[in-house]
Image (cartoon, rainbow, N blue to C red; front, side, top):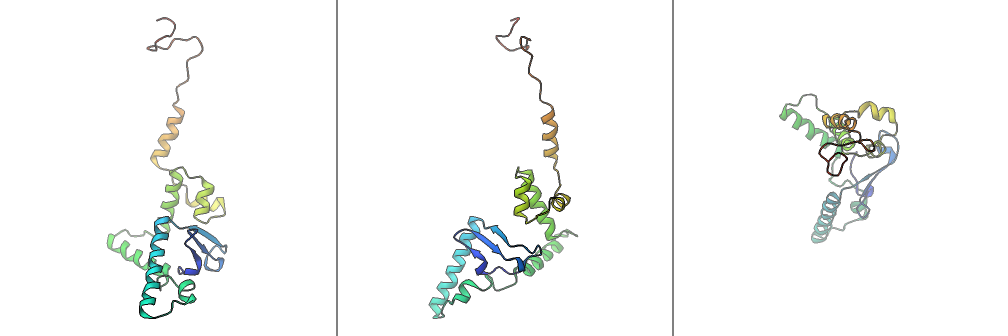
Length: 168
């Protein structure tokens, strides 16, 4: 898959990926972070400026319907990632591991399952839960602490060390 200008709405900061480009077979809209939209806007303006200086018309084809970086984004990312994994000697690490880490971090940060599913373009809760169930130590500790809530004293009971209680 290649990132193309026609799939990108920089004003609304959305990357609209048509179903025919995705394994899921469904259209998908991915939010584009503000900093990425700003950089892509600068890049597009640089291309337009370069064309203007060279007397080359910035055609609608170049502006809207071609690959942004002139390459197949996914295969380039995959090749670069695999080279980095080899250099770091992280045998067996895959791009999907990064996706799994991202989704689990979303969940651990309090993002609801429904939003995490939407962001990762999952539609089936069973598949999602099968792959994204990592529970961190902090989550387990918080669960145990939730059960350690001390009960309030009953009406009229003394609480040692609290001023104004009966018996002081």
